[in-house]
Length: 284
Image (cartoon, rainbow, N blue to C red; front, side, top):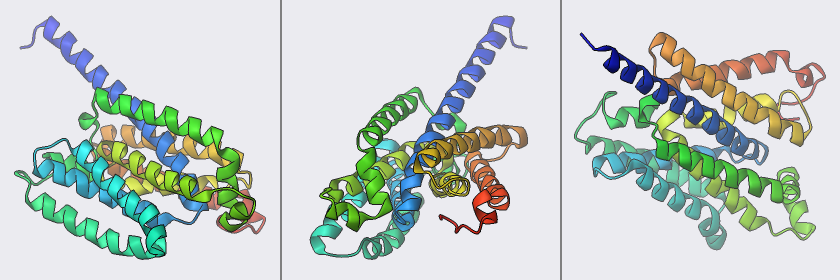
């Protein structure tokens, strides 16, 4: 039988884990859904999908080699961003060609690395990479998320006019004298970093739902990019928090619950969308 002191320690530990998970959920939801607006509007969904699986492959390698999965995921995501961005420009290849090659390659590597892991299953580190786990979030993860959130929001605020012009029409932005390449590379690289830092929460196989669904939902309610940039993070953070509590309530993987909640929100947004009633398109 536990002593009163031990009970207090357990309560404090559970409270700390829950608080950390809640903060991680909110930050991941904010970041992923902000980058999702660019992914959806710039029609680079294939790139986001490829980046998510490259980070997943890197994390799986980290588990297999007993290294920090966050570090190896960062390395894989950075390399993929380099190949999709500057390398594709240098080689004069369309980004879709590069993503078409890298996506199956990353998936193949991920499954190979998983077979090299000493433990395979939902109870191992592979489980948290696949589906996400609130217990896998550490204080370091929170610090990284806060730092990335601050830097990302600051850069988006500083270069909003240029980024808006690129989202509207990249060729017209270039005609207006905007150097679009570094900004596009920045979006691709930022997507990789957001995905890498959100892996432990949502999982590598489901992280793309958190990037795409909230942004797609936000586009159902407004034509104003400023309003969409505010609404998308709200939906993203709400999806994460709702998924977290659904996971705890029904004892289900947190990543799966986040994906389900965000998809449900998207379905509802399509049904009640004022743009759809006025005859507007999906992203119109």
